[in-house]
Length: 247
Image: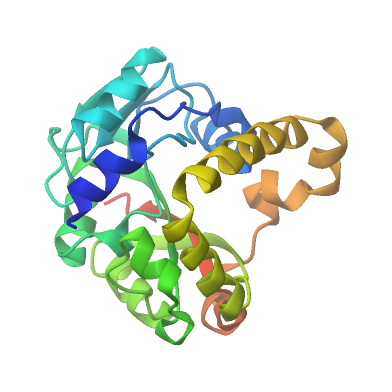
């Protein structure tokens, strides 16, 4: 099954989630400071950027149509060939995207092309090939990145890492079990996934949760770039905030 077929199946008859349930939504709004243009690539049913001020780019027409139902400006296309003019956006967001694309260098160069000078590229991806599980295969991942290679992609495209954070993966046997269960009982897993996302939305929206997780909601508290290679050894997934050079 190719990427398009995978996500046409995954996004059919699924509800779009409120972006404000995700900590990165708060960070995007803080960086933007109420002005500017955002492009979010490949959000699926989980957009992270403000719906009203964002252009969304989805691989499938099913994904784009779902977003339009909630009032979003959505079109189809790929991060490898972004259908917008040069220097169009102040922020480009691509969370859990680059591990799916065949041509990673083309993806970074096209992000660089559509970003304004001084614009921000916010992206996340799984790291460390040794952590590969059946769940990566099920999700359509083509790779997990070596952190050093991520830095090479950013630097070679005039993008400077300014902050990062990360999270640990679930134990390998749990990820493999999760993949097996989802393959065998997909409809049941989808049902519980929808319930879980509703619960997660309520939890993330609470003042108590935000107070307990200040670091997640404020990129100023994220880790410094000079710690990236050492600290990322502890993570299975990283989120990077990069900035395009001003000249």
